[in-house]
Image (cartoon, rainbow, N blue to C red; front, side, top):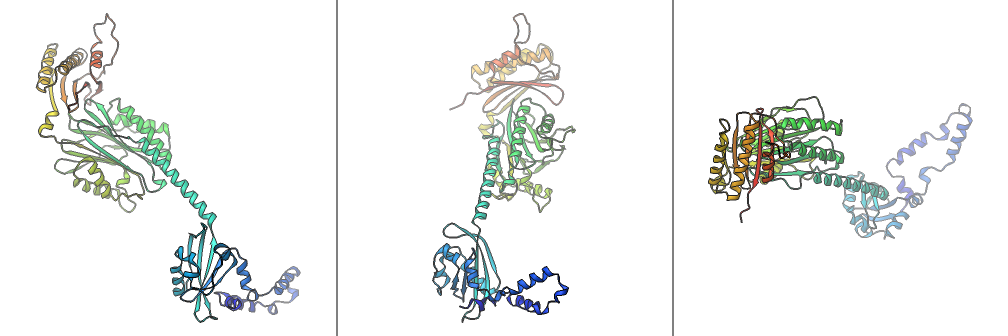
Amino acid sequence: MNFTRWSARLPGTQRRAAARTEDSPTALPSEGSVPAARAERLSDAALLPAVDELPVREVLDRIPALVALVQGPDHRLAYVNDAYVAAFGVRPAGEPARVALPELAEIGLLPLLDQVLRSSKPRTVKSRKAPGGRSYTFTCTPVEVSATPEGGGVLIFAADVTDHAEAAERLRASERRQRETAVTLQRSLLPQELEEPDDLRVAATYHPGGTEAAVGGDWYDVITLGGGRTALVIGDVMGRGVRAAAVMGQLRTAVRAYARLDLPPHEVLQLLDGLAMEIDANQIATCAYAVHDPNEGRLVYASAGHLPILVRDESGTVLRADEPTGPPLGTGGWMHASGSIPLGPGSTAVLYTDGLVERRDADLDEGIASLERALAGATGTPQVVCDRLVRSAGVTADHDDDVAVLVLQHPARTGPDSELFRNAALELLGGVEAAPRARAFASGVLTSWRFPTDLHDLGVLAASELVANSLQHGTPPMRLRLRRTDRRLIVEVTDGDDHLPRRRRAEPADESGRGIAIVATIASNWGSRRTPGGGKAVWCEFALPRTT
């Protein structure tokens, strides 16, 4: 076909030709009104051939990009340039594109040719990988081909973008590796297996966000404190990536260390606040720390800027633990306070991070209210409840924030199971005569609970030593409490003095100092803590033999 005639009909060619006619040398001002150098350049340009006179085929053959021209509804091949031939080989002219240009069919470009021919509008597809492994950006432009019966055609221009595509793929691979590193670090710092308290059933889940930036510092933990008490933690380090996960790991380790001190929740957060400032003064985190005591039937908690704990009671009513809440960790200068919420038998509590309830197009309170409704209707094991809450919140693999959820249940035990969880308490009134009453009480209770003789005797001895220690060093009111679970026997004595005992080596001439040493020797575990009323509690545990 005549490429000179075809090029004259390319869009914009007519306008450029008209502009050149208007600006022809005959319309130039006299030489005296133009500087000499300017006049020389104009006269040189006047000697250059016009664009219409350039051999179009020679130009197209020499450009490094791939060029092909198809015409008619069947997109019959009219022309391919040398670069196209070098890339895909010789192509038969006159054949439909599906036969002559199989590489375009393989990458799905033929439907695009139909669109361009119908709409007379150019279309572009970016970075398509062609046979042979090279990547191209294809631009399809409609052209008029009046010299052919079909009358219309499509000019296909393909620029090689392999280097750009490979660079982009390397960048994506680097981002994937960085995200995998952050997720791996995050998961390795979370508890691999949750501790299993005697009186609670717990489950937790963590979902990283769908992008590298969404891998953050959410964490949770379950810590058995001894004496039947359990600490539950949920937190969220502000920020994303490996740095947030690393800070999270430090805070989680510190929480476990502070929890072993058996301090009230607000004191744990106070210590954690100071540590967060030392780790990174510019890094803040939210945290909720709660302690469950089966003897009290309540969840005592403190919050550092974290979302409220939700509790569903046995009747299905959901309560929100709104107060007290202090500022996030790392801000400093704030005295945290503890609050409490009922958690009796049959209750379920949920601790969670903001990724579960916060959405960009909705108010945060709406997200919490939606979670309350989901919790009200969620039944089953803690893991089932956990999964239902995550699904109801619409958390998917491409969620824009990471999510941590911790669910705990205080089961309502009935039937034979209830026989494995028993409590008995005695108020220690009077002076030294309270000691023999305590021994008789402990012996009677342990006998009624059908403990084996050796465990019965150890329990009575531990109760006697703890009561004697309290009578000698403590102040009223005093109480002896015995508790059994399906795994252990717990002996606890409380009094009104807040001086905590410590284990020490008694010299042969010493008249005291042996009671705690004896308890620590015969028991599986022991400890002490200050009670909210200003006194203390000293306890010890004995592991029960496993039944076959």
